[in-house]
Image (cartoon, rainbow, N blue to C red; front, side, top):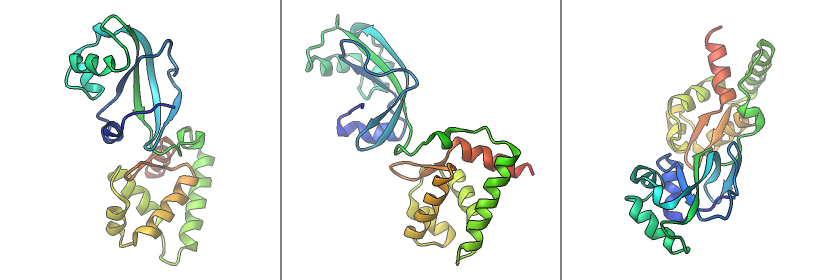
Length: 199
């Protein structure tokens, strides 16, 4: 688990903060690992390296949410760090609310996979009293990533609750991922949309 003060949560979700510095005796995360960050979801770690705190650049400090390196050093002094202290520099990315299953991450779709997904979506459309909705919803999420569900629902003329329920159905097929605000197509969803467009 990676924890941050609440003032960092919004910038992390928006992708503005992508680095953190930790006063660990040794790295507690590994590159490629996914770690929960309550309450904002899951972070993917891209790099974790030991460095001397005095070597941190102003740019890196800003990517961690501080005005400059001096401000970061002052902050970490609260935890007993000095400019000569070795810290762990962690590079990360926010990955949504934790529903990114292995299925959602798998973008390797065979023609049979595309056909099977198309059949499932057609069945969802057929069962819906409001008519076909799956293609329009996927296109909307693709065109407007991380936009509030209430705003997306209005674009389709839906109430928010039914719209959210429909997106959950797409999520169960591995086609979408959820964020604190809004949705995105998953890698699998992007591959499916691209494959069906080329047909």
